[in-house]
Length: 361
Image 1 (cartoon, helix red, strand yellow):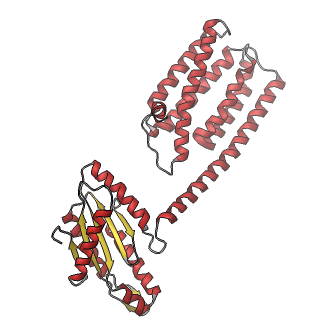
Image 2 (spheres, rainbow, N blue to C red):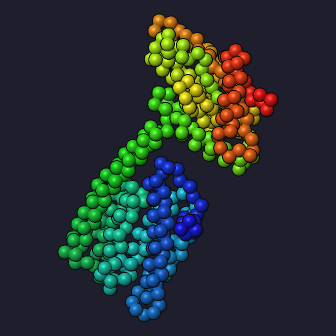
Image 3 (cartoon, helix red, strand yellow):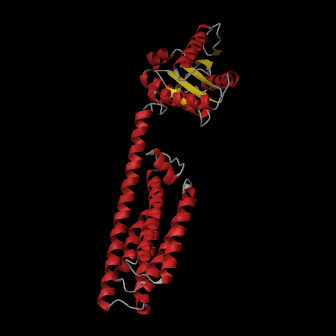
């Protein structure tokens, strides 16, 4: 199945919140190949004498098939080209349908291609494009019918135009509701994923999500042969804050510190709350020296916070352990233990300081 997907769509990678965009891209790829395939079958029927089609339209069908395959090749593996390729294909289809309408006059059902076009344009390019193409088709058939070699009767053209208006209105409403439902579902799923992966008090990654993220980042670091480091941050005398000022004050301190930690790191770093007053920071592409420097900035930043509790401000400090990763590591467990050990060394040395793990420690 993976090989078939790669053959049809190329090497593509959509984000989790791009499900509908991925569906549109794959739908267009299949539509291009299906349209070319159906046209080839019709051409085979002409060649075998099963059905008769005007020579001019045979040329049009051949060009349609070849151009469809070229569009597919240009689009394959390049989702950023989707909108342009969808519009080009739509224009190509309209030209092909008009050619069939004029040159295959003995086929009364040839107008059906305009009907099959309406749902596709709503799916691929949305409501505005769908409405534009629907109105253009209705006007084009109403005006152009008189110029056909064998025009449709007044009753027939009235029925065709009414059916097109109904189909356009149906897909306009249905498309609007479907997209709206999809957006709401996507947002709900995003919120659920956020709730499941983040600590409700500090909005940092919770322990499970943090460790899972770290394992992924370690895998990437190993693949690209890049260094990485972990900081273990533990607030000093946090129980005393709770006992003296109450748990609400403790929550204020935790949220204030969490915000400080988040603002101190890069977007590529991961920050998690892994215990009551314990935090951990994963630093990709960072050696021990760089991690220690960042840890010192964090320590001084936490010390300078002085969060206000009631009518007074209290001093908060943290002991931070630093450990660098090893190439042989495949998960967070070992380096986290080393950072934890370094943090305890900082505690033993008087707290409110940074300690780096060494083998001698």
